Length: 297
Image (tube, rainbow, N blue to C red; front, side, top):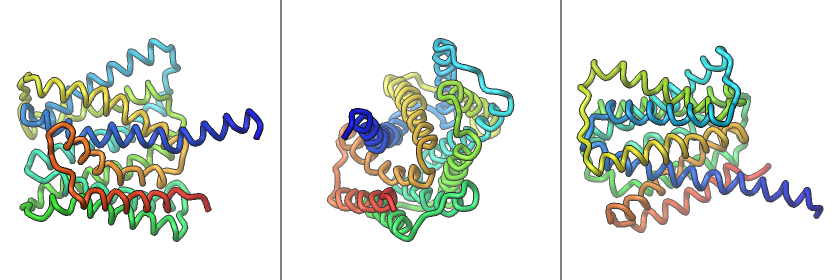
């Protein structure tokens, strides 16, 4: 193997394994971060502060590196993708959990995303999955159901809260496809800044119609807000954009199956919640599903 071939192969493996690992680690722990901060704030207040602060930080970074500002046409596409993937998804999840829906149920609903992406990607971005990959998506969803099964058993259902999680599911599904189709060459920092600022402005616009601005600047809230800004908005979402640019959107979507596992591990480390045997079993099934979905023909 030549030196150039070795470097190229190593780079490919870094992209295949490292980026999804850190994305799952950051994104999954974000559910726990939200749980830490929501008792001290209303959902839209939290999200407004998070998105606007993250957007301003990304804007400063983009200016610092002297990156080229996107055209108005690109800005419009980036804004649409962000309003779906970032804003609609976050509002749906935060509001449903704040209304009392168990995070496990919300995670199970959102876990339908890879299957929906697989269905719609065939029509919208001309990506086709073979039978083995469809089996992989099925096993991934089955694994998520096993992971969250214990949390679902004794939970009361609210159809309004469930509908908000379904709204989050639709947002992240069509937002990912839109991102792949129209924002494949999006500049990372300016694109992230635009999507965060647009999401923050939408949250501020909706705030007077649904709730009042309410924040208690307790230590837990500050820790949660800082982590959601740096770990999720700057870290996890940037990794998601890179993965969408480099790979098929249906395969990238399969990574979301591991998010509930990451959330369970984060809850164990931060809140001392137990990791059930079903979590380990479900993680194994998810790993099988991801292997089948991402294996080469």
